[in-house]
Amino acid sequence: EEKQKEADKMEFEKGKNKYLADQVEGGKPVECMICYDVKDNNGVEFFVAKCGHMACGKCWDSCLKVRLECPMCKKKTRPKQLIRLFI
Image (cartoon, rainbow, N blue to C red; front, side, top):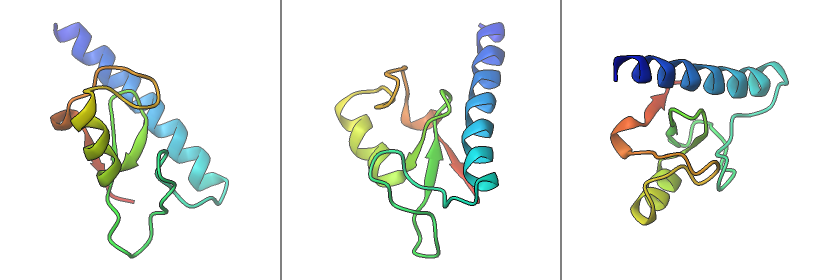
């Protein structure tokens, strides 16, 4: 189980870092992968799952109430596993 946790963490970091690097280095605003809301000063909070997919809090909440999986890749996802991003 400990090895699986470490593997999940590495997978999460790889996905999160690649997406954010692509967005920031490309000069693109960071946006929700579901509703396309953009991170700005309007108080939108973004969360990332261990699979590396990112969405705003509203979209994660809506999706995870229906199914406990990432809406993009269908990997098992729980609300307590989401990590808030501070960007």
